Structure formats: C-alpha cells, structure tokens
Length: 191
Image 1 (cartoon, one colour):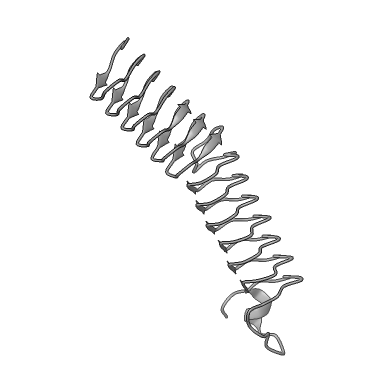
Image 2 (cartoon, helix red, strand yellow; image 1 turned 135 degrees about the horizontal axis):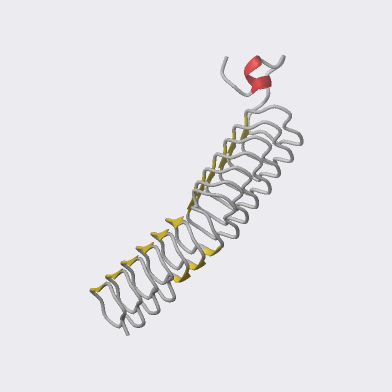
C-alpha cells in the first residue's frame, strides 16, 4: 500500500510518500525515515529507533513518541507538541537536547533555552529555570537548585553547588565566602 516515494526497508506498510530506509516503519505520510520501528509518522526526517506518532520535523532519537513537530536529537523524548526543539513551547520532553524557549518538564539532556522549568539533570544556559535538582545553570532567576554549578542572578534556595551570582539566598556554598565581598562576588562576573 505504497502511494509514492522510495522504500529500502522491510515491512514498511501504508506509506503515502517520502523515503524509507528502515525496518517496520508503518503508516508514514511523508518525509524521510532511516529508522527501525517508526510508526505513524506524518512528515519530516527520522533517524531513530522506535519513534512513534510523529507529525513532522526531524528526529535523531531513540524512543521519541508522540512528537507533533520540530527537530529532536535525543533519547526518549515524549509528547512534544510543536516547534523546533530549538523553538518555542516544547513541553514535557523527557530527554534529549533542547535549544528553545519555554521548554518545560525536561528530565535530562542539554537545554539552551529561556524559561525551562523542572529539569532533573543536564546542562542549562537559560533564564528563569526553576526546580532544577542537578546540572549546570548559567542563567538568570534559577530557583531551587539542589546541585551543580550556577552562574546566575537571583538563584534562591540552593542547598549545594557553586554560586557566583547576586541575591542568592539560603545557599549552602562549597567554599567559604570572602569578607568584605569583592565586586566579583557581588556582580557574579570577573572584573
């Protein structure tokens, strides 16, 4: 039941167009697929294993499910509704690399974004990243960080890690502060 395109795989069924170089890629409406077990893909490029229900965009990932659009180069990125993961409004991503704005509830991976909340690990160069129990943060207004390194302004409630910021409250620093505070300590930048 192939309507068009090129198929270099096994068991690729119900393909409406595009190129498939995979095994068991079913119900693909368009785009390029170089994966194993990628089902129900509506468009875009997929270089992944087990990427299901992708509506568009580019995916270089393993187990990326229910992605509606954008580019994902991660592992286990689930329920992404839109945007380039270098885009806007990518929510509920469980893993992978995100260079976007407003990426919420990311459990691991690398985030170069603004407003990334509830990140459990990885590296964050962002503004307003809250509730991060680990990783590296070089942002503004990162609150409730349980570990890692913080180069930020207004980071509150940090029980561990290194802080070179301004207005960091309730912190348990790993090094003793210097008195009187230097401009580097006050400004969070090297002067």
